[in-house]
Image (cartoon, rainbow, N blue to C red; front, top):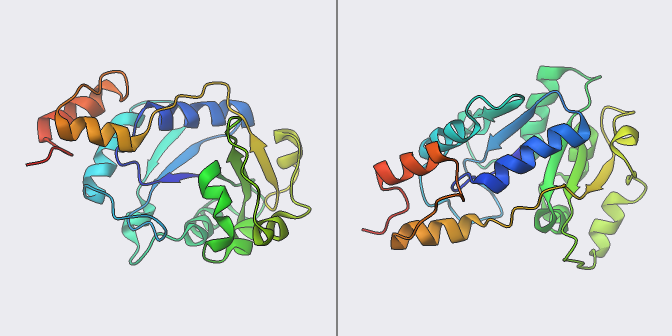
Amino acid sequence: MLGGTFDPVHLGHLRSAVELREVLNLDRVHMVLAKVPPLRGKPQVSARDRLALLRLGVGDTPGLLADPRELEREGPSYSADTLASLRQEYGPEACLVMVLGHDAFLRLSDWRSPKRLFELAHLVVIDRPDFDAPLSQPLRELIAGREVDSGEMLMQRPAGGLLRLALPTRLAISATEVRRRLAEGSSVRYLLPEAVEARLLTDSLYRHS
């Protein structure tokens, strides 16, 4: 499970999903669109538009799924509820993995039911080698004894582990920068899949009126 607002989806998101699947030998990656992210500001365009763009971005990429399950629930998009849904779908013995960016990981102890996340899945943190922030005391307590050194060790159990992972390709693309460029009419070529760029420009999404 790779969740996010995908506001809009860009090549950094999609390349990370592909590499996660390869590095961890995953059957599939659910790219789960957040409808109402509890700890972030309201996305700039509707969830339905963002889902349409995510589906265009994923296209026919093997193993990647644009997952709308959080749009089908009422209220905020809590990751524990989404993982519970995936656990019910795949059964108690399947290895489930939730992927976090480093910034989100640093705030993990502030999430709703953070311990429940580990009961339902493993957590994989995409490391930022150029960024070394100290971990808070609540976060250190939350992850104590959970960290492993490899994907192979992680997959020995269905849930409960933590792996920090540096991906081979680090595309420093920011959705904030993409939105800024779209708003001012600047080029976003090679930041987004062509199909996503075409839809954004056709529908004038993110353009200031």
